[in-house]
Length: 218
Image (tube, rainbow, N blue to C red):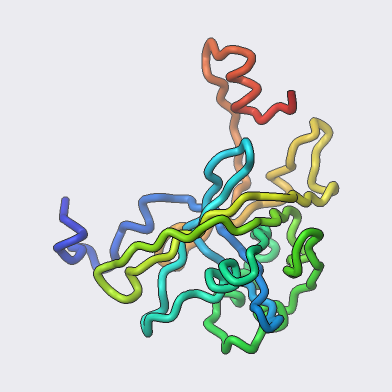
């Protein structure tokens, strides 16, 4: 089976595109509006870009009526947002925070989670999340789609502070991913969480290459 997604409808009853690039990390992003309303929303098109300095991006499609997402507007207007690691234990709160609430209502309150203010900016973090990145807004790259919802804002930011709950650091000084069980997005209405881990090391890698891949502090 093959088809041209820019010109043809999917021959399957559900488009397979989002179910091919999987699993995708979730950008559970908190921000604040200019008038002080705390916002929280999950984005499945989120990724790190580089590590020296650490930079990240997320992509936010418009609403059907053409409105841009609150997270994008808040980041542009205040200069900051926070990434909160989504986990299996927090899955219900993540799902509730995806609701399209009125702008004056905070997803923190609807999801029943605890606020904790970031250090460098006036943004609330999800206190129950094990890891947070305080992200300083850099720029937005906007692409027009074939439809209103196809138009997308891609936001770039630099990570200025990293918070880690030490209860989730193992004896080797690494994140205990099996305990954290990070949540990831599949396609359709499907999610997964990380429970199985295996290690592979590149044959004949130099010491510098190995340290870079493992993230060793040198």
